[in-house]
Each structure stands twice: as structure tokens, then as C-alpha cells.
Image 1 (tube, rainbow, N blue to C red):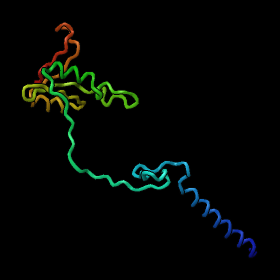
Image 2: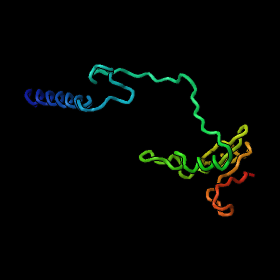
Image 3: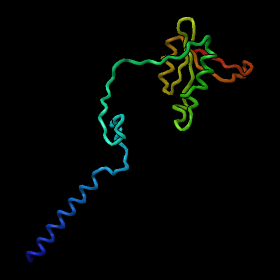
Length: 144
């Protein structure tokens, strides 16, 4: 093997390695990674790392409803059951239930069978929309 072919092979190997390194750098039109945010006033050229940490507990409650039927009606039209495209429904097959809390009712929508036991322990009921035995009214049957 001649010296010229060895030098040529070495140069090709270095060039191939350099071009592979260029493939790993992000393209100029790509957006920043999820945890990177452009600094304000920089025009988006610079980015800083966002450190996300839990600061406090957050709880969202709805209701209370004056009766079980109103809690059920709210459940049947809720975002969990009906959704809103493109997010869609969260759980179309969830079962609407209501349970008493203080002097009012709260709704509960869940798919696991164990959820019925949770609601039953609270003295709750399973919702039934358009119950024809009750003139198409929403009813709530106690969970045994």
C-alpha cells in the first residue's frame, strides 16, 4: 500500500467523522427543547434552563351541587366524559356517580370498578341519564 493511499484513507476517515458531528448539532430552524425557554428581550437567540419544582399542593374542586341529579347532569357534560377536540374526552367510558358531602353532593367520574366501592363507602349513588321510569329525568341509584 502506498503512502498516498494511506494519507487519502486517513483524510476520508477524518472528513466522515467531522460530517457525522455536524449531523448532531441542531438545525438553525429547530425550536428549543421542552425545558429550555428563550430569555425575554433576546429575540429568541439565547436560551436558559427552566428548573421546575413542586412548590405547593394544588387541589381543584367543583360543586357542591344541591342534589345528586344535578351532580350527575354536570358529570354527563363534563370535560372528562365529553371532552373538547383536539384534547378529546379524557375517559368516555367513565361511570358518573355522585356522593353526599355535608349538605350537598359532589360528582365523581371514574372507569375502574374499585371506584364504585369508594363512592359506596361515602353513601353515594350511580347516575342514570334519561331514566324512562322517571319521565326521562336524571336519577341516581344507591350503590349496594
